Image (tube, rainbow, N blue to C red):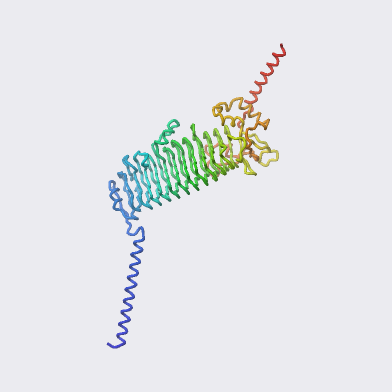
Length: 491
């Protein structure tokens, strides 16, 4: 073979080896990428009733299981990263044993299913969906009924609950409420988890509608929690949570925020929560929070605060409640401004004479429907500071049984005397810039249904007059004095 032919053969061999090497590298990269992809080889599996448990055992990561219409017996256990999707008419029935669906893997999706009949063991957190060490789960479009817990999550970060309906087994009763503390479950129960999002979900007939414990950076938006046996919302040891645009109505109590700091509570409705231990908002050892544009209407106590400091309570509507704000001496540095207090029996009650809690922000105070303010310079601010703590409210805070005399002539006379003689004021709490007209607090762009026109307009102040009762009492007292004087003169 001549030298030129040998050179051409050698070049061809080199090119062939190079092409083979490149092909091997490309094949290796494809295999590695396929192995790294969580959805490599993922498939969609249609599941007939009765096959769900077996299909879940054989499913791989990334598979989608479509549950066909009909009743699928549970309980079901999910141990792989799968999507469990219901075709309209698909129902998973837990048969009253354990949790209907238990999730033990990350990134699981459960959507568009009806779930019913969980077990009833409180200590096992028998739920519609129970998640344990299962971060990144998404639950959407679920209808969960007849369950001990609705959704129970532990050590499961970034849980997403959207557009669900949860119904428990509690029949709300003021008398039964104490027993329900240990006998019922919660609608959405989140423990030791971060970043959960609960949105546009209706929750009813549980002990607590939403319960968060050691759960930080939680977002709750657009939900309804009603008809629950204790609290619509209950948090314990939580930080940096945001609760916006929700409705907490008709519960034994609206919400209880305990040992939780840096909270934002905005544009929520707390309405018609009545009972012996009922609050719109209860704050126990909660500090540095921002509570704004909420509506607290027709509650026994609108806001109760104990051991809570440096909170800002701005722009809320407090209407038709028994007590507006109850502040314990353990509270300091809280600021109330731009709120409307309308038709409240006792707008503010304290258990101390001196206080560092402020009822204005230095430029604007609150509207008090019972204040009868006057405004000579027409700047919208009352010309005289208003003391929202009445002597009778102060006394009844110490002796609750006195509240029965709240509308009596004696209470009216005491109120009139306070206005006439400021030295009779029992507390240093003063609004230095009281508003002459309602600020429209808590209304925003929402419908004002159920809220009196006086609170949602600036037409003018609304007053709960005590003057006629007081005047009648004073006339009776005066007549008695005159009678005594006449008898003495006749002698």
